[in-house]
Every structure is written in structure tokens, then in C-alpha cells.
Length: 303
Image (tube, rainbow, N blue to C red; front, top):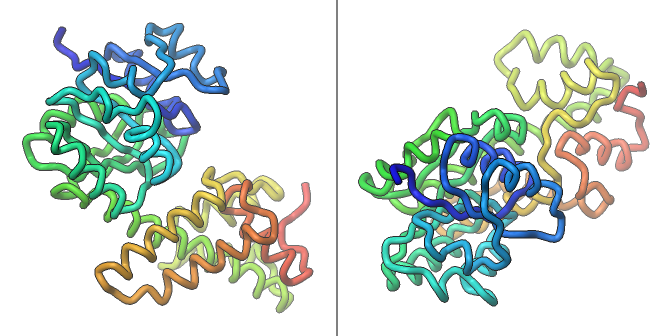
């Protein structure tokens, strides 16, 4: 068989598209069953094999991909009941595409190395739309030889495969990327509130930002989408709760180096505030709704 056998856990918004691309492009795929079976059905129909435990994902496979929420979930899959670590054979590669915590990544990498198992940090960028299209970005922390082995597999669901550097550099790059993205998002929401409070039309703010150096994809996903589609806050499909988690990991990482995290802490607390106001399950553009609640102003245009 010329393609490695792959196990996959985490068929959520991103993971479904990744797994679908792997199986439809000819990779022998094993997926773990979950309470919500809906995302599993078309992948199994396309030829994937279904198993019941995390340990089953490691048996007989060459690579196991993890695509879950964060560090606690990654640790549970590796070391929890019926976990991968209990059965992993020498030569297995575990690729963690989650946005996890660098300290957890390093600990698991060292633990699995003792069993002859490689643990590779390879977090993702872009959205579920690109996941379905096979056009994600991925940042891989691995030695040159391991990266060379993984790159053809990663190209099944990625447009841009970036070798960030040695082990640990993938998750570092992802956290810094998310810090910058979420800084823009929180600043955008605050700017909209200030504009609304001053009486300035949000459309005029959008017009001038769009024409200058401050413009960005994040700004357009939030304000451009909101104005274009009369209040649509779904332009950036990433929940505020997950964004808060990522910023917590970023500030811990910066402090561990140490470097100053003054802006990072402010962004993190802005996201914490939005969670406390009840917007955690909404997407990041709903930071504008949080600003509405804080200021008592109407900002989001009504359809």
C-alpha cells in the first residue's frame, strides 16, 4: 500500500473537512465514533472504518491526527482511558492539529518519545470552508525528515504547508498568529462602539479603513460582512470561547519565555468579558454585540 494508514479523532467544524479530504483522496482512514454521529456518516460512506476508542485509532495505523479543542482534550486522547499511549507502537506519528498549550505539547512529546512515538505539533489556520475545500494552512513543528514524511499527507487537506521549524515551533507560530488576529478583532469591535457612541456611521468607518493600510481580512470578515449582509455576524466562524482559550495559552506562553504580554492580556480580558456577558458560544464578530451590551448602543444593522 503506497499511502500511510491514518487514524483521525475530532470530526468537528474543521476535522470533518480534513477527514473527508483524506478518505476521498485514497488514504486508508480510521475514525473514532462520537456522540454526534452526523459528521461521521458521509466519511464512513466514503470508505473510512469506524472504531470506538482512542486506542483503536493507534492500532494498525501509521499516523493519528488529533483535531480537538485544546490541551485537556489532547491529554485525554493520549493518556486517558483507552488512550493512544497505552497501545502506541514504535514508529507511530501522532499529529496534533489542535491549538493546544506549548507546555502540554512538550510534555506529551517527551512522554511518547520514550515509546518511540513521534508527537508533532501542527495547528491549523483558515476556516471550516477551506477545510472542506482542502485549502487549509498548517504550521508544522518537526525535524526535516519527519516533515518530509508528513508533507504529502498534509497536502490532502492543506493549500499551504508551512514548516515552522523544529518541534514546538508549530504551536508557537499558531498562538502568535491568533494573538495578532484576535487583537485586530477586539480592536475592531471597540472601534465600532466608539464610532457608534460618537454618532459616526459604521459605513464611513468601513469606507476609510477599506481604503487604507489598516484594512485586513479580519476587519472585512467582521465589519464588511456585517454591513454587506445586514447584521451578519458569521463571517469569522470561530467561537469567542475558543478565542479566549487561545489567548490564555498565548499569554501563558509569552510569560514563560518571558516576553511582555501587555497587549495580549488586554485582548484576553476583552474576550473574557464577552464570555461573561453571555457571548461565548457565538462567533468572534459577536464581540460587537458584547460592545452593544456594554454601551447600550445599537451597532449591528438589523435585517
